[in-house]
Image 1 (cartoon, one colour):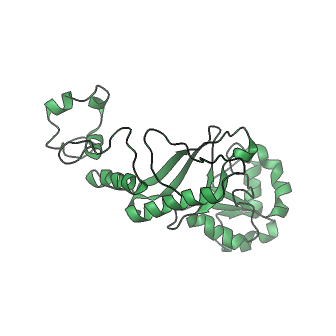
Image 2 (cartoon, one colour):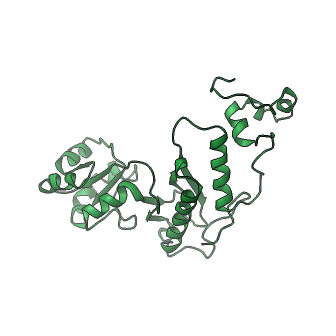
Length: 251
């Protein structure tokens, strides 16, 4: 056995362990089980291209051989062929995942005090004066902030609080809305905000391991299609950078 409660696989003999590089000899039992098949062969080949389906199957296989004690979130990271210094080469959009995120998202609504009760009844996490007071105190305990266009001038005063946390509503990300109820419904379960960092790297959620391979693959393809449909005006013909290990898929 091991401290993690996993049995040492039969193939992991002292001779096999000594054959690993020094860094890999310090790995956990879970790592050995996840990254090797039942015969002790590595399941991933460094530098090899994998399709989305192949990559997700590998991920599901890793978890099935050494299951985690929680339902892990599947995330994807993409390096874009963009220069984020230019406004027309910045990625920022919202995408509706076919099977949702699998996680509960706290949606706050910046609205008038007179609308607070109505918006809370629609399923908002926080809204109205309660939200406004907490923002003034720089208290932030929500995941997404939405607002109607007429509220944006008031919200602009809180740019120093919201900007660094990337929570300021924007038309590009779909968080400046006209229909509170629809927006709360979308962002609470299915919709995600996708945006690049200063290195034009995009990280986003693609579901939960419990979804199974088919749903995760469909969610990932939904992200890629959504990004292709809403790519910035300055995007080059080759939108994604292809690394040494990548997914060979066309959108």
